[in-house]
Length: 238
Image (cartoon, rainbow, N blue to C red; front, side, top):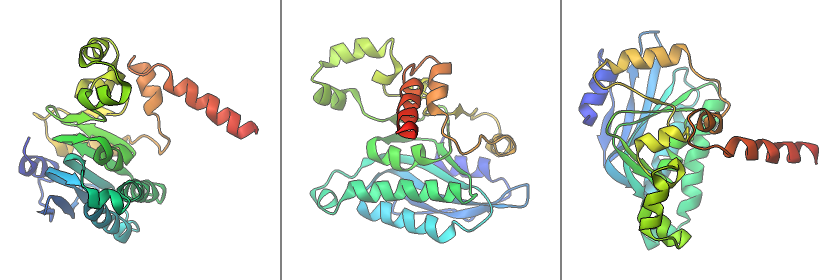
């Protein structure tokens, strides 16, 4: 789906969401009388220092509202530039993620809506930093593509491609990210997105992160929950 189609299906009663330089800002009324605050990334824009700072400012300025925050995403990865790296891009991305988590903890449920591409740091700091991440068919998420994974692990592309056939954590793509629990739900693009959003808000998961548990249930990430519990228990008992 294109951005205009996503917005019109999500907000049939109208909205004030606009796109400027690949960043989304605005709001839209919801059937329950609340107002959704919308931020995001469009047009496969890379998220650098400037983009992360602008999005963080918008979220912090609006965190005292009452409705959900929708993070709509079609991005590239983080911006690959010397300037951004020297300015501390990793800290800016971490700050953006913290702003979303802070807003959620303050009673503003955050929902990521992935309709296009996203990868690496941009994915981690936007869609993956929300309480619930939904995706539309055709979305293309990747924490790391196989070529980059090959450079890090020193395994050949062929070896990784073979592993990806049976192990979701070795493979990019919507199906694999859903199996690992990173994507909570895949919506039906043929049905009103407004109705699907209404149903989600009516039965919204609590703020605890259950992605590792979903990974077990979907047989896509079988060890994360167990290891996380061991680390938590060790920290609690120390």
